[in-house]
Image 1 (tube, rainbow, N blue to C red):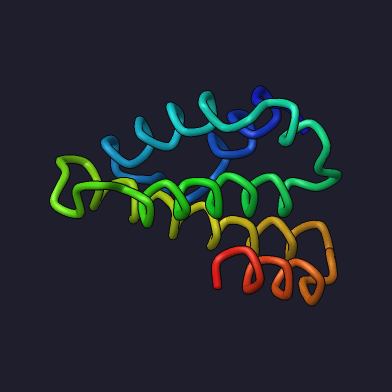
Image 2 (cartoon, helix red, strand yellow; image 1 turned 60 degrees about the vertical axis):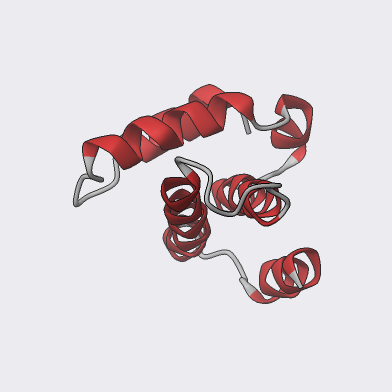
Length: 106
């Protein structure tokens, strides 16, 4: 999966995301590890990868009151939610993805 693929897929989501969330999610797609993103075979896995990466960064923040952290947490939630939406659209078995997400986040 490429960054361009992720951006294109996100632009098709309805209802549209609030502008601030959409803008933040665009930035986050651009900063996730591109090599890791290109290794995932499905949009579901791409969205999960970005969401988990972001959640790890939020959880590891030195300042839990840092400006923008709430928006990042909301974005992480949106990416994981979109992972399941993409899985449903592509008829992907979510079992392995759920186990991986629980392992990585837990």
